[in-house]
Image (cartoon, rainbow, N blue to C red):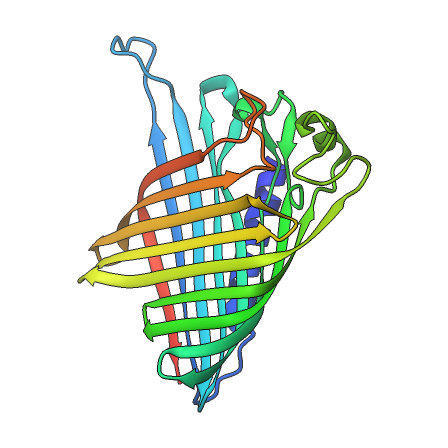
Length: 297
């Protein structure tokens, strides 16, 4: 439980520090969505329909800041998600865990077209285990894997709520820094998340594509989509793909309902069940509170 408390404290600190670090000028537009969802169920010993006592807590922070002056713009985006569930005697187990930070500089060239350069980082807060059972093999943790991508290319942003970026020059570092995880997820070549045996880092040179959509579809209903694709030039058929989707609806003041989905295909991430790469899917439906902080200068 102490690890969970530490993670929650770090989650909140990172959320507010990223939002607060930007100085107020007449060129910044920034927002931060903070959310907390709590679910609880209880049954007494005479309940005949069946059921397991449980608690579930999920937090999220979605931040965005953008500086625009003449032809220049700087954009920072952050997605943080973390959730745990406690069902009967199983103890606390993680059910949502994500860190994503994206920073770019763009130079407008003509109309919606521009040049851009930047980087993004992806990982998770705490350890993940096979089958979600903390007594089973640990198969992931912070920076195992972790991904850092630097890219330079062209950007197309025809409307405020959509942009697409393509980078023919991109560098990706894959981190896998845990020796136990190296043993538990290694493929038949001994590679762990694509990193060679005994090493903690893999460097790749390739191309990168990202598309982002963030729009209120109607009043109080928002859709966020983020798709990422990376391919290495030395193995063009070996690609990584990730799609994140969040549909949220405000039903009363700060009360919201959210449906989240993630789809991942990464040939360096092996299924805990089959030992082979496959399409990874996750989905979560939550109801809770969300508060939005905005600052437009």
